[in-house]
Length: 179
Image (cartoon, rainbow, N blue to C red; front, side, top):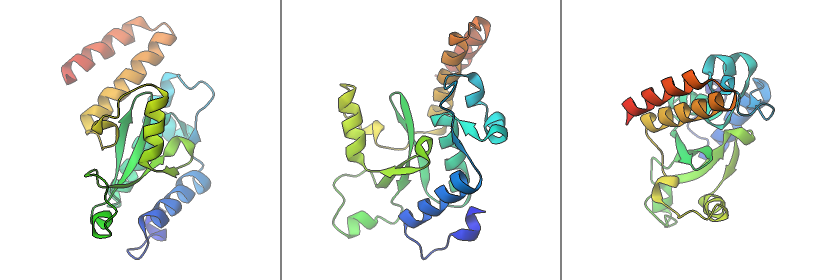
């Protein structure tokens, strides 16, 4: 449905606004705030059925659909949080003289909050609130293998909370293979 609503004339902000409307308002996807740590929040098939997910699963769904539509939205792996970045593929910020750094991200998106748009200042404030350094990788897209490692970590934590020690061990083995 998203592809029916967007066109080349729209800005990145307008595209995300439409994307958010379709995914969250029309299709009904939302954050799973109850039982946040349940393993089912990481199972894409369950997220598709229930239309509820955690930060990572909603971000994966969002970014995969966006990339399929050639919208440059990629995952950003933050400590204790996962968001998305809308890449500035055409270096619009640089052409306008607004590019403060080399990150090439127009803005960030939080699918867990129905696609709320924010800027790098909010990431900086978030990291400062956790007393963490402002590392470049907290502002840039991560690889698919990093997303997979994050999902395995989330699942391992969820299984640990419900006492599924064998599943935790199995996931730790997979994590070791990924490096």
